[in-house]
Each structure stands twice: as C-alpha cells, then as structure tokens.
Image (tube, rainbow, N blue to C red; front, side):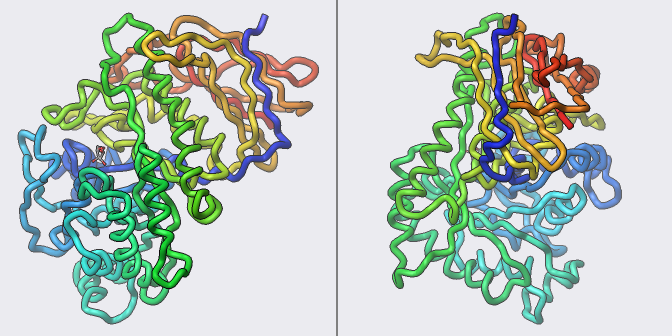
Length: 498
Ligand code: AHR
C-alpha cells in the first residue's frame, strides 16, 4: 500500500531549467585550487591535476565561479598573469594551509579560463569591489575579452592567448554586506552602479562578446529590497545593467553528521536545506518590488552544507556523506520548482572544500556522494520543468519548529522524455511511492538509484568510493501507466520515461 503519491503534471510547464542551475564555485581557500585542481607533482606538464580534470569533465558542469568568495575582494588579477607573479597574503583563508599559507598566484586568469575550457564549463569571474576599483575591474574585462590592439589585449597575447577568452558572467564583488566591504545596501548599490558603468560599457563597446552582470544579495531580504530600490535609482532614469541578483545559503553549521545515531540531526539538516525554497521566493519578491524576475534572474551563488568540521584549521574541509548528498538532491528539486525565476546555482566548493564534489588525497582523487547526485540530476538540464505535486508523510523535526516532508521530487519534460527525480529524505524507513504522470503511457522506463544500503553518515574515501555509484533499479509500471517503487531509506532515484 503506497504512502506517497507523486503527480507529475506534464502539461503544466514552469520554465526551462537553465543548465547553469547545476553550477559550481571554487575559491583560493584551503586545498580547493592548490592540491585540488592544480598540483605540480602529478601535473600533466602544465600543472592541472589530470585525475580531477577528468572527473570534472565527465560531469555536465555548465558554469564555474572563481576566484572567490571572500578571496575575490582581496584579489588583484594582475598578480596572476605573466611570468612575474608576486607572492601575496591570502587575507581571509591563510589558515589551514600548513604547507602553503600564502598565495603564490601560480593559478591565475589563464589557468582558470583554460581549466574551464578543459572541463566544458562557462567561466564566471568575481570582480574585486571591496578593495579594488572600477578601473581594475574594467581592465580585467578588457584583458580577457577584447580582440583589438590595446596594451591589455596585447599583454594577453604576450602571455600566450591570441584569441579573447569567452567570459559570459562577471560578478560585481562578493558578500559586500560582509567580507566584501561591510557595506549597507545603499552603499553597495552605489558601488554597484559605479562598477557597472565601466564594466557594463565594456559589454556594449569593447568586448567581443556579450556578458551578464551579477550583483550580490543577502539572506536578509530587507537588505535585498533596499539594494534594489537604491540601485534602480539611475541618474538618468534609464534601465541599469543588472542581470542577476544572488544570495548564499549554507546549512548544517551547528552539527557534525558523522558517527551520530541522532536521526533528529539529519531531519534538522534537511529542514535547513529546504529553507532554500523560501529564500528563492523572498529574493524574487525583492526583485519584483522594483523590477521583474524576467529581467533580473535569481542566482544562488554559494550553497551547501557547512558542518562543524569545516573550520579555518581544516581549510574548511569536512567529510563527504550520504546525508549531504540527500540534501543536495532536495535543493536541486527546489531549483527545478523555481525554474521560472532562477538563472544559476553554484554549490560550494568544487574540490576538497565544504560540500565539494571531488576529494583528493595525495595522488588519489574520487567522487563524493554529492557528485553522483549532480550526475543523476543532469538529464534535467535544458528540459522544461513541470509542476509536480508530492503527497508524502511529514515528521516533526524536534530541533526546529518545522515539519520535514519525507519525500521530495521534481520533474521535467523534453521532446520524447519525462525525467523524474525523487528523494527519500527519511533516514529511518522505506517509502512506498506511486507516480502518476497523468495519462502518459511510457514504452520504456529506466531508473537509477543512489545510496541503497548506505547509512546516512557513511563517509566516502579513496577505497570505498565505488560503493556510492548509481545502480539500476526496478520500477513497476501499472496498466494505466502509474509507476510504483519502494524507495529504501536515504536514497535518491532518477526515473526516465520515454
Ligand atoms: O565558501 C566559503 C566562504 O563562504 C566564501 O568565501 C564566502 O563568500 C562565504 O561566506
């Protein structure tokens, strides 16, 4: 007898799922760049870690944000180009890097943009607003994207890159309400306008390509409303170059999720992850108060778990667990539900740091549970999200005053396929699920499951990594086309119907 009913309203289109909703974020922090992506000892001759590059290239990675994070507002791009690269402080993230507490600038603009080309991701560069100026920002855009005969374009050529790089996204700062300058919303709005005037004019006149400008928002939505109000006040009353507004949402900060038999901790973590839904609605409302989400998209620029193990001394490293993977699946479902307002989402951080997808140790590199979740969700990219109703039991999460719905789901359609993802967020029991696709009678159903038989606090390492890979799964098909599945505890399922 099923206890969970999912209805996929295949005719009720939400919007296209932009591939960028499955984006990533990397920073000069701990072992993300050095040792993670760039490692001279196992280099392929140019410094990239081939094993990590291969893992990232195998994933459909639409976009990669760099160089921070807080690092971005203390980074001066000219330090990281050419032969003569100064060694600098790493103001925010020197801690936790015993072997390399300073920034050598070995990995700079060319290295990052080439990495993006190797892994097939669009680059997204975050400009320095906190300690930089609009001149430096516009120069970086010119250096990267201009094909003419200026000194900066020639310098790029001298440094080995003849053709302009393609950089479709430029962020105006990072967390400028905090590490990016402690600004009030009005102050940041004025800085945004100043930077966007110079950088945005490059877009119209000098760059050989079009690009989007991205402003930093906050989890405090009153801050976002005030920013939008002020930034809309252009001196000439003209539409202002602002394509996306962002916020960062981390969760699980008060807990470790390994070696615990306290199920309520898992419920609390998942409830905090599901708060993403309200944040997206509220930032979209802040945009819509003065503009429209058709013109200014919502980006969740940094997101994921941040546990008590991730402190300065560990370089923000924490174990990669099944429960973290489940939380990622729940968030990616939420992104699909908001495909009409969302333009990008970047999980933090790509390698070794926070809820990374790839982990390294010495010469080993392996995929974490969250990597497999992204892989399982990749068929949604570019599809049309459709309304999905979930009627599932809920549990009172004792540490919060919220209920946890025990199953999450989302669905999308393409020409000849409906793709459904569902997650059993219940770490205690299996769920009998029925999926109604409203009269669709599929001739082929393929399903893949993640984490069947794994404990929620199972930690991945170099030796057991293969045990977290997807397995094929039997889904029942009734005469009327209804699908049935018994979803084991703490599992994620991807079902393709053709
Ligand atoms: O991802 C780690 C840090 O979290 C980033 O540098 C900052 O933007 C956020 O506070």
